[in-house]
Image 1: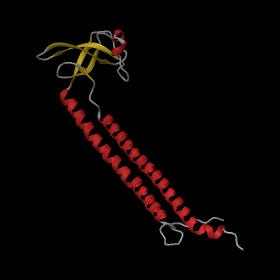
Image 2: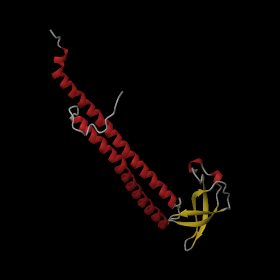
Image 3: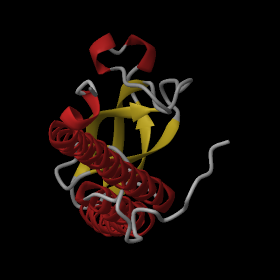
Image 4: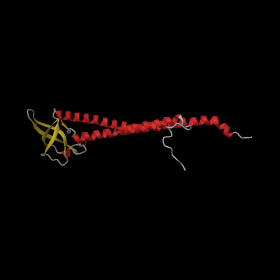
Length: 194
């Protein structure tokens, strides 16, 4: 029957070697890194990403504005290179009137099923070029959470990799110590008795 003695690496005994103590401290350090440092690093990265994303969205809202425009070109006839994915799969030419600047036109993304003559809300920059809508608060939050989880996972992976390397080194040291001790005591055990 095998019995397991907890904490034997921490207690003083004749079987404990220096590499056992180092390995015990390494396990403790890994536990602290995984339970404290990885979540804190993920939270810090997520908060930083949220702040930067919110600032970028605010800057885009300040630099761009939304206008109601009329679709003048047929979205279905737009070249395939201008077609995009997600919620607005087509690009079409739109026209709107801007106070002080007159009638303006640009190519921008429009929702699927839009026909010439339909009225759509589009975002334009100061030069009148069509741009994407600034990210909403939920998009910024989702990005921040993804960054935080990714950083925490990377830190955890690095900790596990470091722990695997340190265990490998500890095993090599342990085997080297056993070889040295066996070289000293082995001849007494293996010599024939007369």
